[in-house]
Length: 201
Image (cartoon, rainbow, N blue to C red; front, side, top):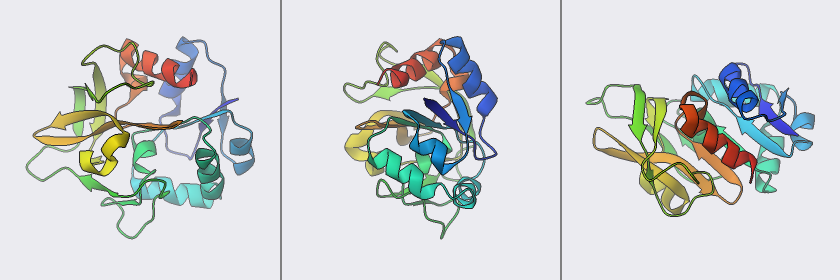
């Protein structure tokens, strides 16, 4: 079962539209029990880091979500869903992320317009299952004020992106754990290819 996790603020409709377009069957879920029976998990993220993590705690799914990711169940975190994998974020100081990877999410410097809104080019870093058949420098759609620094993701970075001279993690890949800072559900044919690649993992 492909599970799209609904924490109350994710961009579910667009994600559903993408899965419908590629012919995938899925369920919208919001409980630990649902996560534990899922074969693949998608965590869309729109809004505030603190809102996402507090919602996971209110729904009492933090432990189950970490358990499934650590068990190598294929997981795709979109935007905040990527950021949540780390220790914490400047957007919500004092609130712990899932802590699956070390490091903190940072805010773009005040010299840059935030959020970054619109299309930007990916810089793939070696082979990536997630980015297969997307071309050498695919364009995808971003809407983010916060980012995972390139050095924080390290070898887990499947693709980087540059915004105003800031190099950040655009896609992450570690085993069956994937994350994208951009929105594949708003990235046309390239986004559909990326979601299809994830579902084939």
